[in-house]
Length: 211
Image (cartoon, rainbow, N blue to C red):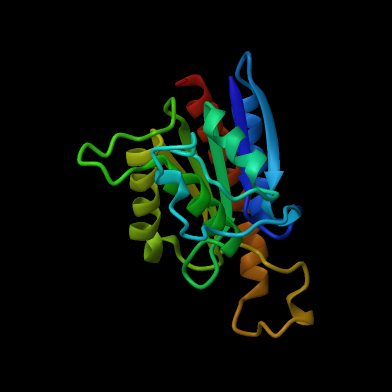
């Protein structure tokens, strides 16, 4: 069973990275699992160019992105994965630009403009999302559910976990962040974030066991 975790966070050591690693560890705890964790910020790549080569009926391009760059081998691994875990912080009400660029290159080739709209990838992949944010999750439920629905329609069964009101800095006094109650945030981080990571672990394990 192939497990692939994709981190769309720039920082490898904070909230998103920790939660995604927990989800990855949960999936990898399943017997027979092999996996890899990829950091998109380590790669040199672009989003979709809109060339539509992935829709061509000739040259064996149908269902594959024609752009060759640092993301190309990752896309092949994502298509072959049994479980795909995607982690991103929420910036300005959306996933990071790197995460969005990955999704453009991963999801768009899987679909056609045919009447039947049958996905082109050879198998279904379980998809687990990890989101982190310093806002209230309730304001973003429609956004999260739309991503889950899109993945389910195009790739396979999908679900998500989210950590909200996260701790962004170890010492808030060093930053222009006076609107935050640093002590309350630290207390929540100490008490709630381990539970968020556990929920991510359980999601990863649940998805792997359902393959």
